[in-house]
Length: 412
Image (cartoon, rainbow, N blue to C red; front, side, top):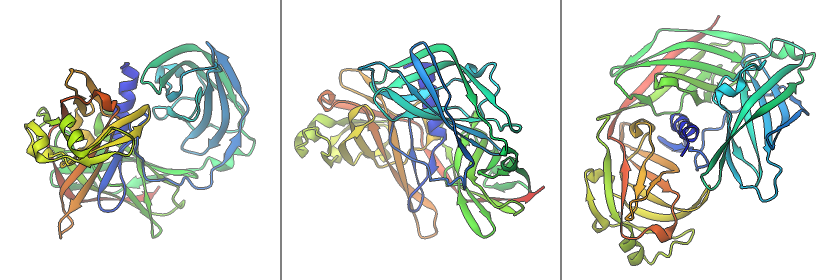
């Protein structure tokens, strides 16, 4: 797997967010299942665009642009224009591909496939200064295909972004001054910067605490009596987190609430469980067709260094590149415990398959504290390869720090 594909996966794990009842989260790996809480950006000031540019057999189309005081969002599509071209899973535009452009990226850009030889993606760029056209120049496009292969294409793509004459009235931005930091159980959260625009509210948080600490809960911003759920937009280094919320009322105070931090107990102690999947499939009468599922019994575990993993179910589900296997574990996995790599399935023939997605849910006790959890790990592997014993490897254990970290934000 190429380095740029791996970087995109690392970004996706750090972008995990809580969803559903109680506390849970879904990790959206490149091309895998999972989602973030929906973020309504408010009434966007979007303008249709009609620019196109071709180089090295790849055509880029600029479809629309949304302007605000915090970002310029550009919707583009890529088309290979080749009959029989492999289906595209993902598009990645590396940061060094923007050299010399009038617009620069504010977040790592990527997109997901919408057709067999074409895909759409959105670039989050710096705000425009005012009316007048601006130029977007790209020198590299990196494509990930549905079969897992990837291709880096160099060229010179130049697209003109049309900025309307009345754009200035939509570029208002209001900074929010943070109140005191919030500290709880050895973890301190401070707001480094906060700004709201017509389309969103951005809050950057610095986190101090044990190595590997992460906030697990959905970030909430309360303003004018309304609660707004956010998502993690970026987390360089894991200790500076930028959250994106819907637009909040200009001039209004706001309260940021973060909850449920998790801390790895041992950064280097990987856990594993060896499962006789072939025996389980035979006993449960599973042929490996989509929709097949059955229980995994304690007797299916050949060996493990982490009894808490306790696999409970085996299911066959479609993935981004075809059929795969989903294994339910009796232990909750979090992004921080992966140590830069995803869970893996080692087959009897020695092949190693990296997980495409993880979905985790948690249980609470009567006080509301998180006491246990479970995860479903999806591996893109053909059922015919599940011969004999396979090893599921994950990261170290963690413990949960319950509570809420609350910081006040005041318009400045």
